[in-house]
Length: 533
Image (cartoon, rainbow, N blue to C red):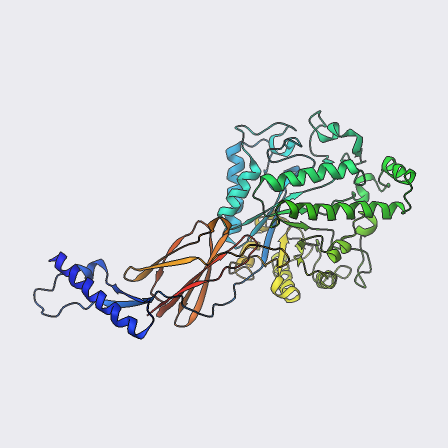
């Protein structure tokens, strides 16, 4: 009886398909929607009425629809390794403990709809990754030059686990700090010892590479190129430490007499301050070009001190990175030597001397090359009574100022966890939905091919799957479903290749399913859509 029933259903489906093709298009098909229970159910003994199966028509042609725009916003968090600020929490953890801490952090970010981590892999001329150029970090194992046991590559682990969750991994490194005062003794494994001719000891116990020395620039350049070449990272990130803050040397001038004298003896005519800035400017431009020469899709970001100079804009007071750190960050933005720019705007919206909105608007006015402008937020310790509300308001104000290229980076991940109200305030407010990163149109990329969408009718739901010929270039998927003419959008990780979609939800009927592929720069492929009737 079952075999005959199946044959009858097959014939019915065949003729229904022919009938459907007359009213739609040549390649449409009709799929019988009967559950297993109905498909094989015998006719009730006390009734002569047969059970009529429901019929769902799935249009298999290249169906054209107007898809909604995908929400975009950069949502990052700094994860600091220096002095064991964030990760690892101690320098004597086992490998399994280190991995467990990382997983907890990444799961938390994924669950709260973040899409990037800024991971400090080189806090001070050391490495939280396998390197032939610099020693293993003291902050990882408690001893400079000592690898983790059993040996593993922390950076590789962070990259893989981030990407599994649809989260970008930006490698954060400090270009000029050679040794941190909390970094243990200066051993013969330290770069202070190995590059003693270009390192300078400061009054607070830190060591600094001389930024103007060509050997410094060559070494750091090699470190960056090595990272970009060997790792599947998404960006290189520099923070605000160029020449050190004056307090690091008890207010005294940076002691770079050797390189300054060499410059003067060679006929240099710049003032000492301009010479320092010129050295940093040339270095920033060099790093930007070398990164893109190695891998065009890897971005370069800098998070400078939030004030360029006092009085810019009018009414701003505070330290001058231009005069103290010899960092002409405005020039780098004007020239487009960055792909994203994250000034550390660590003050409240209502600050009298450093109002958040005024500073962000000023930096926007200087963004003449239309690079990404994603401010850094002081989520840890901004000086207000209600920190979560202030951070939420700063995100919303940033959206108003930056429009479709909004984004921010939270200093640091600790600010998201130490205040019990911070994550709920963000998740229930501005981070309610997931978001893709904004596109970077100045970076050339190979267009993704349109993915293929497969659909099977499984009774109360549609079994949906998809694939792409160039899946190696895919970073994420966006799945679109339409119920009663209203679109819903879902951002999915690369590993997610199928989903069961309800045909009826909250009293609404499924009309259309569509899929897009997204590359690592946030670019969208064309879509494939199928209509459900």
